[in-house]
Amino acid sequence: MKRYYFQIPHYSYTYSVTTHTRTTVKIKKNIPYYLTAVGLFLLLKFGFTLSDNNDLTFLLKPTDKLVGFLTGSQSVYISESGYFHEHLNIIIDKSCSGFNFWILNFLLFTYLTVQYFDKSLSKILAIPIALMGAYLLTIFVNTSRIFTSIVVQTQTKSLFLNKQHIVHEAIGVITNLTFLILTYVIIDKILTYKRNHAKFT
Image (cartoon, rainbow, N blue to C red; front, side, top):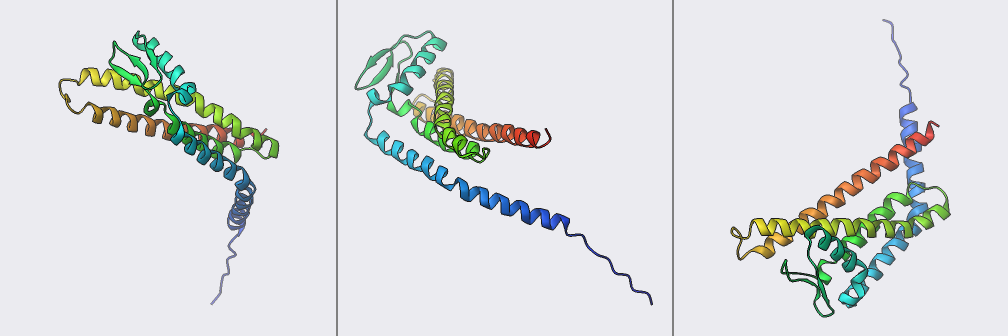
């Protein structure tokens, strides 16, 4: 009886191990940058607990201007309360600043961009750029959230007369979570495409 011996190629296994090793090494190299971002996140989070409306005008003012533009409403700034829109009967204050969304996006931006770059200088610059990019996105998302909340609450006032705060909170959670997921997916796709495209050019 003849016996046949087959040799199984180990190319895929070798490639998998090599890729895993490179990924592990890259993650270890990025740890200092991730820790820097987390440290800044915690520092900002602590500062937020001590802040008031005056400290958050860099987030509140542009949001208020955009909301006013979209609704045609004029606001009055009251230091203790925030931006009061008499026509809409709403106040844009510290709780509406989108601060937590901003710093969460900052962590997300930093994680995605730092792993994309190879040079140390690029990784360092990625942190402040991530902070600014997250800020701009926060203004857009926060304005969208407040405007959507105004429209929905106006339309459902008769249905949820005594539960408008629940509607407001639900819209906030859905809007923020949706944009967080979309941001991650879109940026990851763009960076992955650029990385793969660069390998073939």
